[in-house]
Length: 237
Image 1 (tube, rainbow, N blue to C red):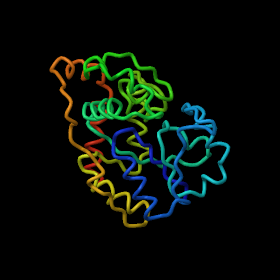
Image 2: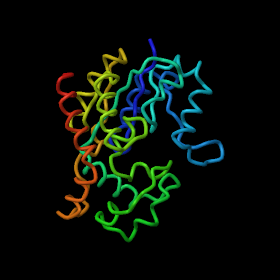
Image 3: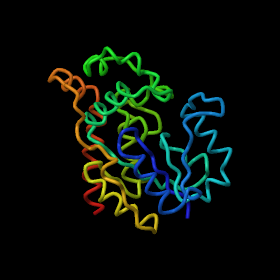
């Protein structure tokens, strides 16, 4: 059986999912694609694919391959696509991302200093690059990752196609326990997630009506994909 690819979109409870998988299956069975190279430099999405391709034999034997990568990693391992992921309401996810960046000083968050003087409206208007450190701040991140790197209308259609065809189970953060129950079947092991680790509420950040309107306009593709994922996740129950 080919491995299952857990496509972890940032700020969707994925760290808790990986922790649960490793507790149940062991670290050898649950591989996490690294974020940095040996020198500490962030890996691009292309470099993550090269990392996986160079470890094809080892990764094929894994139970789960987890990480912040794009749909299509399976092609570099020459195995069938078997993906899982967790969605979060897009505005909640971005507000959580903003709050995390603003309150966390870390090499993993190079935007920290820049956002100190920003409110959410300015953060949302900033044209973040879709590079190794900024893709999670740019609009339509779900579409970008599930399509394989395309946040256009065409990418939205491709992401929806991938979601319907190649994802063996899909969850939403507000019903994470349901997702973990379905994932337990795929993993053939009981899985549990610590609820206290997962913040599924909107963080305490002021979001004006203007900012909300602008966000919804910029993230139409993700809002549509989230609606589809919500339906798919309920059908899977």
